Length: 381
Ligand code: PLP
Image (cartoon, rainbow, N blue to C red; front, side, top):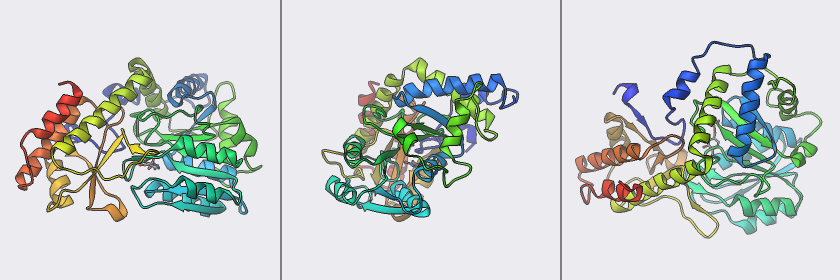
């Protein structure tokens, strides 16, 4: 199917509004100019509201992982410990990054199962310079308890790092209220900008605890903060200027909608996907408890019995609707639908309709139209 007619329903990169795409086609400017500085400063201010923080912000050229890398490289030296919490692919990435720069102390749960807070506390008893966690574990569609883990981190005097890459601006995420020292997002998620920028907020405590020299030259948060505080605001190295144009436009779009309103809308969209899954007898993948919730930005569902990933996602793709599969050990076992950014109610209806068509073709549809009806009811259609 023509790429322009394809509906991208994966948990990032997400659909980008034409207005944001058009912003990227503006003529190039010098990244040392007042024009660039004004754009960067505007983004930094709007991002504070987007993150719900008074902490300082930097925007780095690179995908979300560069933000994770920068946080760990800035804080953790060879002999420093970092507690890394995982219940999915991206939590495990923090362990890998922690091992690269220092001593990672992993606290693991089965993918898609809740984090055990007692295990986190036990890991902190021996002292650690930082704790790193993923708020919205995209690989399994689960929200982890940032507020509770942040309290544990600070009780043990550790800097609190949160990967909010698929969360900030989509799920409830309160950087300051949860005392998050370093919060990270990526442009291709709830910001609804093309991939290529990492956004990082840095608290005074994190800055105070930075090593003299970050273990990373390029992803050095001290250098990024120093440049961002210049007048005009700058980045240490040449940034992806068109992505900054896009970021500014997308932030204004989100502000026009209202940052709160966007989160509420995102929650409704995810609720409608969960309702459709229930109506179609499709089980949700993650396990939730009092400390964890289903994600509003990505819904992970078990592959219905007797249908392959190729048939389900391949069949949907033929109809122009792209959803994600499972990653690594979950390949073929789950599929995931993203609901971030400018995703709309009609995008959901088209997605569920297409899912129903594919299920019907494979003889796996229990009740024709039930998914669309259930989703439509939640969406008020
Ligand atoms: N963390 C989470 C929770 C993610 O969802 C992703 C990407 O999907 C990443 C980290 C990695 O981000 P990137 O691929 O932008 O480096």
